[in-house]
Image 1 (cartoon, rainbow, N blue to C red):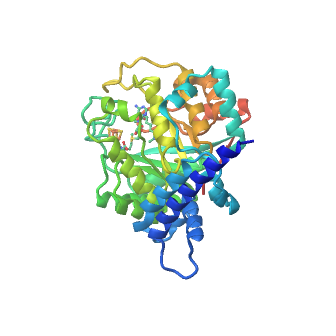
Image 2 (cartoon, protein in one colour):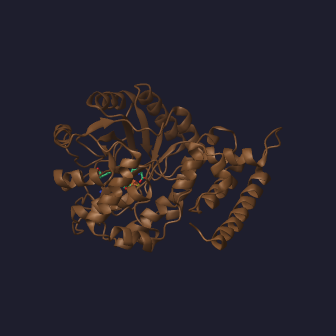
Image 3 (cartoon, rainbow, N blue to C red):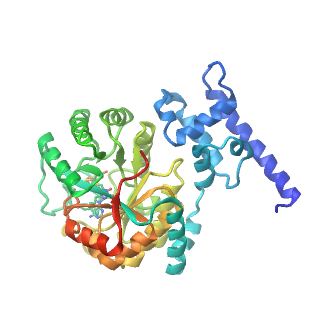
Length: 410
Ligand code: SAM
Ligand code: DTB
Ligand code: SF4
């Protein structure tokens, strides 16, 4: 139903996009027989699903990513890509990566029923709404962290009563992982209170990953900032996910953390993505941020060249001794709104209702599941603070008709 003039404008724009992308592809294209520009574009689309990561293309990845980014900023279908539509191309064309903060603020500020309705529709298009993925957390290296994250009980700068402990050994970790599996978890997440792991730490964590993977569980670790070769080493050990949160908007970030930058975090996310590991990245609400900061966090996440496969939304756990201990509590609808907006903006991501479930209560959690949350931390302990009991989660799932399921990103 577009006017001819508008169609022509679009065609001209398309041609511009094509030639840019083709140029980027051509510049980086391997000199192989039979590899023409069109094939190369298919490869860039596959990259989005991480297939191309398995190819040895480190020097070309940035060009590929830029190319994908340019394509994905178009909201209408590009005829050439459409003609050779693959699942990867479909995803490239249907997911948005061009959100503006004001647009997301408007989304967050909608009447709750409107936001919930939209989010739930998106949720049903992509997932079974009655299945929730279960991840169990283990703190493999507790306390003594040099960073100053204002929310964190494990920072050595605050008096929170959390003891500093050495990295757990393989047997202890395996025992916890076996228990998690027996209780129904599909993923085992190991957290370490490091600013950044040393190479010798990576060797030990790689052993833990191999052991947990051997039990048939998905693996996830969160170790702080990561260098590209460290990410590759973890990938080889069998790591499925790396958790590294942006925590809040670029603007509010400096109020919460001063010992590492937002860009440091984005660099780690790049290293993880380039190593072919699925990205788990989200943030915290309830730290005194404004709605625009929540929108800013969601925009940064959704405008990444590839959406994170997993998006944990944490409600601040206010821990005595941390600078944010006396922050005013937020109500459950604030959390639910952020979950709903994340679902709308990143339709295929697993949105994890993370820290703060105890405070949300049954009704708040039920709303969050309706809004599109389809993953939780499962087990009585988060890292240093309490989580709902396994029996409580089972009882709530029973009341809501929810069953535990695995993720389908692998
Ligand atoms: N040290 C590593 C790092 O910061 O990347 C990994 C562990 S760190 C505890 C992982 C994440 O847990 C943080 O980025 C933050 O989002 C979340 N977190 C920590 N303390 C929290 C709290 N009190 N309430 C809510 N979320 C918290
Ligand atoms: C995430 O987003 N939340 C988890 C996990 N990733 C590592 C951590 C929550 C920590 C809550 C405070 C604590 O227990 O120390
Ligand atoms: Fe350290 Fe991570 Fe806690 Fe920050 S969030 S103080 S980096 S353990």
